[in-house]
Length: 335
Image 1 (cartoon, rainbow, N blue to C red):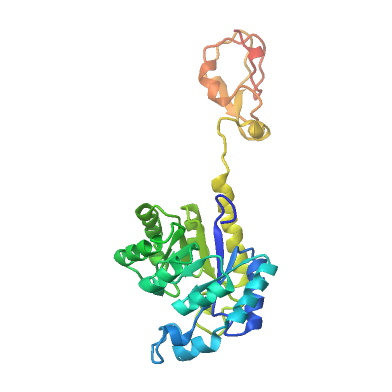
Image 2: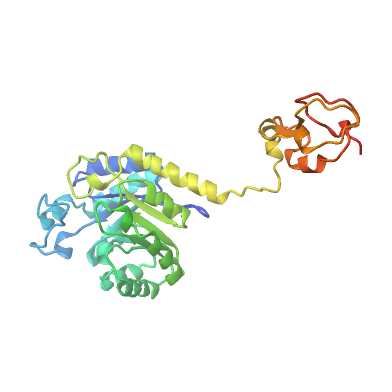
């Protein structure tokens, strides 16, 4: 997002901080050290988004959902401080809203764009509220049908065209078979919009493939350690893994953005002389001999008559002695 053909890499912190403001600050620093473009949190206002008896997901039964969101949430002033810390650390701050009230908070915080989580795709009133801000939107698609996604895209596009649709599979961890890179490509064709990937596999491979296929945004969870408490840590990347992921995506960008010209191989002249083959004599050949196929072979180095020209030398006459295992030159032959 910062430059043409630059894949925006989002380090998704989510609730890995477990409600610790200090952990949140440090995670921002870690994301910046990993050279992510964006560090993303989640803005939960428990009373605005969930009932007290709402079930927890199967992969995290640590505590009731309402209490978990309430315990780990940051208030407006804390979010402002985290955004300021991100700015000081030279990384963009982003947070996903899970209610219209959260959008109001994030507007006060001053986020520059919005990420819609997969569970909110059918929450058209929320999408409407985000769209009205006029800010760019990243729309995750994890658990939506095409019809639901169509409705979400159309709701966002009512307000502006600054929309990126991100393939996501709401499975933790996500199996390779369920990543849906084909869906990302179908989204690009269906909506004529930029696309991305929010990845829940445990390795970097899906992200690298997505970057190769044209993703403009890639999101991956970041944690201090997979052993941390909470819903996201064990499905997240540790700092060294995330750093390798960023390096891999940047390498893919370089490869995709760099043309190799096969019409000019001058840069390989030294390698060609060492590794290619030239026409050589396989026996002692006296002057006046008409060359036959049995007299000629191809051996290194590639500094003589190229091996590809051997057929053209058959039938030509020698004008001087040629010793066995000698590079044959044009000077050895009649015109």
